[in-house]
Amino acid sequence: MPTKEEIINGLKAAIVNGDEEAAAKWAKEAIAAGLDAYELVTKYGGEAMAIVNQEYEKKRFFVPEVLCAANALNVAVDILTPYMKVDKTTVPATIVLGVVEGDIHDIGKNLVKIMLSASGFNVIDLGKDVPLQKFLEKAKEVKADIVGMSALMSTTMPGMKKVINMFQEAGVRNKVKVIVGGGPVTEEWALSIGADARPHDASAAVGVVKQLVEKLRSERGESW
Image (cartoon, rainbow, N blue to C red):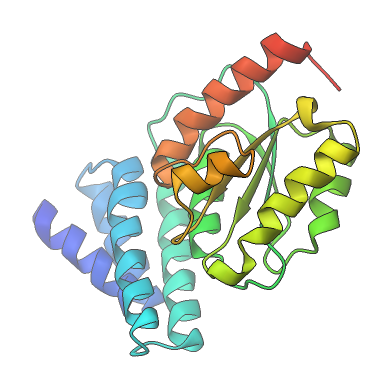
């Protein structure tokens, strides 16, 4: 049987290379070896996608390679998710996620979606290049607790502030908590635009969301 190190390295290489068959193989090896599925997805899957992002930024990878890597990750996640040993949240909550208008980089957002879904949250994924008004419309429609926005391009970051302003103008900013993320998004900038938090990574997002939901419920009651 392969060692833990061999399994981890094999899985990461499969993701970086966009090899879905190898990703499935190593995910199954991990289960057989009793490895922590949660750690494999959040830590090592995240590390693999960070490598992919770096290669993309250096123009050694292009959109097809990134998509293949994301598909390989999704194959592994589908196999590993039933084995994730995470505490299901005791606070039922609905989260609306999306990549802001003008940006198509959704790897980070997808990782956050995976982790929140695995932790028992109801996640509504708006996808990428989301029209700004749609965040408000969907949040009102589903009575969301959390709205999460992502951006990898600094030129699209101002859209996050515009969305927050829309919630304020609609008189419902106190109904939701807003989290933002993405490579160029700093915690300082997030707070400066009125967001409630900027989770460090996908794994940290789970704890941040739980805290924000509990705080929100105590502030507004149970519903809109």
